[in-house]
Image 1 (cartoon, rainbow, N blue to C red):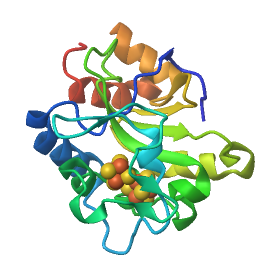
Image 2 (cartoon, protein in one colour):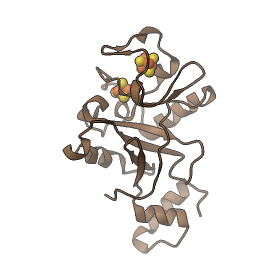
Image 3 (cartoon, helix red, strand yellow):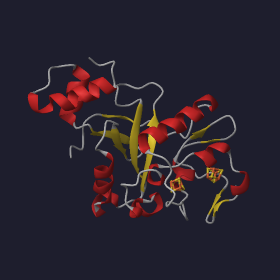
Length: 204
Ligand code: SF4
Ligand code: SF4
């Protein structure tokens, strides 16, 4: 799998940009990642409570900083936690193809749908982001490869980030370049390039 397609500054994965976007963001997460799986529970994981940006009128927190309410036992205000915390679920809670061992606190990988308000290209606006959390051995253990294999089959762009940089992993470098340039694709890639262009229509 190609590991360096397009690199760019990392946009913070955000649980919700604004109140009006919350239901549509949740709808997109269900459409693109799938519904929340009944057999998957957060358990002791609180990764999203530290890693992600929360930016709603009701509740805000910066990225990479533990929420003031998170404790070793979970959320200290669980019963009255903000709406966004009740309604947002990471990719591991939604994608059945991700192995149980990929739970973020076990794998050091946090999968989420990412929304970039000012995307630089068609692969950035709405995409799947796999974030390598500090201290994770997911690359060396092979878990990162398993997670990528589980997520890179469809027409949703997949990025891998380490908190400082992000790399486009799917589609691969050659397909991405053809989609962005509009150049004619060779026969072997014609169908795949056409499918991406059709999905992200502004690139002819
Ligand atoms: S990162 Fe996922 S599994 Fe962990 S607490 Fe958040 S939603 Fe639950
Ligand atoms: S309020 Fe609770 S659920 Fe929400 S981010 Fe903070 S610790 Fe996590």
